[in-house]
Amino acid sequence: MYFFNDLIEGVSERGAGETMKVGSYDYDGLAHFWVHYYGAKSTAKDRYGYPRMSANGNVILSYSTEIATIVDNDSHYSGKLILMTDRKYSSTTQKQKSAIRYAADCPVVEVAHIEPSNIHEHTDNIIRWMQEFKEAKLKMSRARKESSRDSWKRRLDNIAYELEVYGNAFSLREFEVFVEALAYVNGVVGDDAFEKIDNSIEERKEQQRKEERKRKQKRTKEAQKALEKWKNGEDVHNQLFRILDVKLRVKGNYVETSHGVSVELRHAQTAVSMYKKGKIKQGVHIDVFDVRNVSDDSITIGCHVIKKDEIDRVADEILNAKVEKIPSLDELHSQIETNINNLMELTGELA
Image (tube, rainbow, N blue to C red; front, side, top):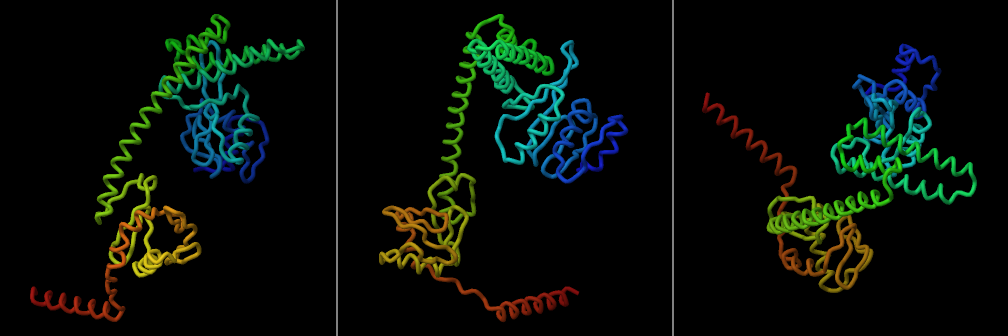
């Protein structure tokens, strides 16, 4: 990635004729450079900027997240539009978004999808203009001063312009939702058009929520099956183990949890023995972890909430497990020397 400072010479080559601040994390300078010289018309594909804010062609990023893109339009309506994500991020990203707004020489619109790739994403974006148009029209009707009414009238005109640029840039002239939205913001149809599209979006989102619940149920069942295999000693793992109740197993000289933590068997045996005697309580050390809470049905150890039923299930297995002998360093060295000697003898016989 090129640092912004390295590209300043390119500005003068383009005839900018402006002096821009050069320094560490110059968000304003980078945003200005992106908007005016390396925007949608740029053929450059190299990413440039800083680790916290950078640009690549018509897209600008905060850290590694795309937060804005320039939409250029060569039609009769000309001009360009900056689509900015409507998601809220860190204070650093908010400063970067403000820098883009300040540098912009065209409308900046916050939308759900800055690079829409299907009709659903376009619909989500379009409804944002329709919703703002509806609210602006209501505020204009309630304004008492003529200057306020004029201000809201200008905003209504700008919304219609922005939507026109957006539709032309993405070739949405044949898209029914765009046609209805354009008619709405130009006063050809009433609020019924807004309600119709808004309802269709809500129906689609509800359908998506149902499908997501079905997918989650399916993944959960798969995770439960994998967890049974894990309990039986198989080395399997599933990302959804962490949303299921913690399970325990004895593996060699350790007691492992399904959430990826293990403690030495000897420490686990001491803890289980205390548990059976009713002496386990807050503050007790188990290997490198502490008991944080003891309730009627569970014990919290570190960040693990372990049900007492699960402890009862494996308690006898833990207590009866034998600690496997670990060879000393001398024994390991002796075994290695024996293996080397055997290998040398075998090599000599083959020669």
